[in-house]
Image (tube, rainbow, N blue to C red):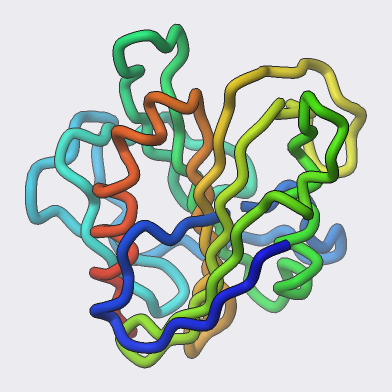
Length: 204
């Protein structure tokens, strides 16, 4: 795994990374942010969201999906030309739980396999940076995405040519997880918006 340390918001360029299927089974209570009224519609420019004492700007054009168990929010990104499926960006926050940072990063990377037999950990790119005084770790990995029915469940489907950009933000109230997953073309087209969202993160 390639690891780079980057400090300073101005260095946030094309880093990437993502979230968690595996979380503590003891505490699954999710703390919703005070912004519960975001509708299931395309987000307008300047709209924000928050959870766990962390606030961010929602990229314009991303739509808010239906509520999902254990998630604070799910954003849907329409498929780009050449892709048959939309991408989604899941936001997670667990009060007093969620697992250790590196455990989650390794689990996310393990959700991908490589067609040439290499370990995904050997091709994943991981970076550490500071975003508005909050330590943030990001991971970027592509390959065959192993879709499971839930945390720790067996793989039910494999999707080739997928990519994940995900981040773990160390907020004052705990870890906040962002996980963007989808077909490679759609993720490439969404990367700038994802990084803009990440760079907009602020503590409350």
